[in-house]
Image (cartoon, rainbow, N blue to C red):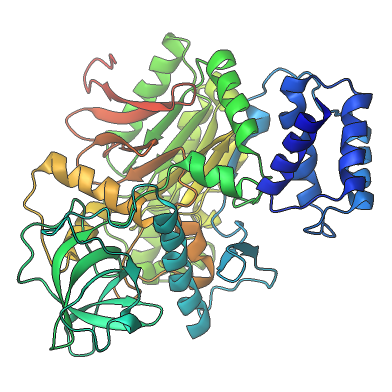
Length: 557
């Protein structure tokens, strides 16, 4: 029995890339014995200790007995012990709105085969080095998923010659090998001559699509990574016979490997803890709901009426959501981002009268929203509100990720709504074991405008599926080159979708949809105001969403 317990102890710490000496194993066994931990609870108990150990600044790969003893004593001082009973779940205590600029940056370290936390301060001024590192991280994260995928043995792409198997190669291995077939992973981009190429860390090669019958599913854009299979020619081009998206890795797989890494900056949890929390949320919080609305045009005459109907419907049915996310655009009119400086000077009125009237109107609209929310005391007390800026809203910067709405316009909201969060775009919502990414961008139109190589002949439903598949397979919210859609390279990690979130809200002016892909639930709530008032509800207990409609006349749901 002791041998089985030791194997469990070693297995848990090995998951965190730790090794154990005899003294450390003996200490852990003594801890388990002192608390009479049952055999079924050994793994979860040791996991608690291993996770806390790896949070220590002086933690070593080979477990230090002194540090481990300190971790155990600290847990004792906090009133915790392995195997102890959990308290009742408190939704408010486990609900976090995570700012894109507060997420820690983890670079992929190829020499160690894992992520390393960046300790130097991040800046909004992009350097050439940071741009290269951001793109290299994207490639390395996708590549390690590809190499780990069980179906990648050696090729997941359809080919005309199924008898001749290929393995993943680098562009530098093509030289002098004309007539041979290769499988490459790289980024689709245009060369200086305007030719479409695939680039990896070692170089690039021009692509020839003339013999490609049909591309794989997805939207292949400039800046996206693709698996391409083809024959290298005497003209130094790759004659493509198959192209596909890199395979998407399930959240559980990534969490089982990197569960000790705190990607969000809110504390790491193990896969076992996630599983236990998931069961408890499903059992104990079945009625918790989140509402998601997009294009909440506060200058539209029907918007506040629709919000009032929604709030009243909640009160009448005793169905008060824990969270309401309002995504921009908060105005139906296009506002130049160059007016951000004017907005900051708005209170001083050192701008033209026309500009001042426009900005004053925006402030009044947010004030009206604050008054409306405050007129429903039960919702004001119990519901968290999150406001996410859209592409046309005035913020400090127009580059992704975008800063929150300017405080110039939101003073009354801050004063009247106690549980209000002014979020970045994108932002993340952590709720127990779940991670929900909220992104307000017209992604469908932008992706379709930048398709390269092959264009799919697809219906609307197929395009929705292709968009979801492409964004999740790329593990990035905006898989485009920096010249098409720039991001702040020091904060490009806020755009990543790795490990895969529990849910992604792609708030878009495109048609509504909901799709679950590789276990990740993706939905677009659509524009709030139209022939009726539309939005989406998300149930954490079910990890699923529902499309909701409020009639424009009688307000019945």
